Length: 85
Figure (tube, one colour):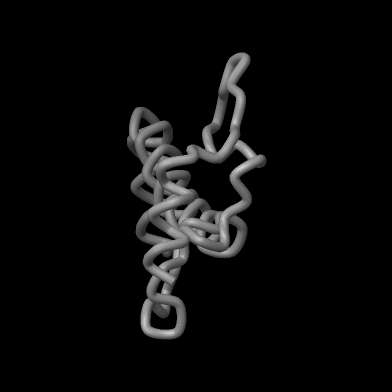
């Protein structure tokens, strides 16, 4: 660690590069954990719930940004779903 600090004192132009790499090294696992813990479409154990999409609420949009989108069930899909159960 002290070698890195000594190198950054000698070569100040590397400070932004080290900052960006450190931000990416901390940010990538943080975002992965955030999506894993908060998003319903990310699953770890597929054997306990083989069809996770059935637990999603169709009235709640799953996109980051939707403009004037109406979420309603499609009759044909509901009919097929009732036949397969």
